[in-house]
Length: 230
Image (cartoon, rainbow, N blue to C red; front, side, top):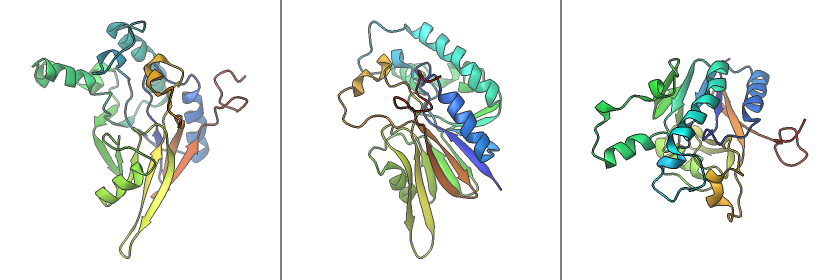
């Protein structure tokens, strides 16, 4: 039996402090033997094209803290597949805007010191496609992607929703799964969402023999994975 564990958007260094413990416990329970990071490993708040917080970390300090926090993930999952997210590629977009070609830039694995991780925009494992989901939005983003791809598809990117939906025809049955995210919602990097009525859904995903399962992270006040829980 194949069991693929999918880790939601981390947005390091603005990750929920207990997300790694939650993911690790969930993957152990499911007997996960392959790991996929769905993208946005790092946030790159300071490299964004929108307004940034002038009171926040500078670009170098933000990158250094992200690298330090990434070390725990790298040690826990030394081999993994990574779907490159829109935040991950911000340094390349900045470089292109300045007229710097990619040949002068280091690749993702070198920058983030992850020799055992394979960074690509998408990966396919046993008939299921894994993509970050850049360009998608809304509660039906994952199943919409699956229908467009005509293959079961797992995405992240859309922080506010998590879960699995199916679409069936006479020829096939496919699912779309959004694995949510692993962010610390109170971080200044996500201040833009404070007025939104729908809050981020934290969680991760598992695909077992081609069937998708979403595991929500119970991190509300008084719940197991709340950041202040003992």
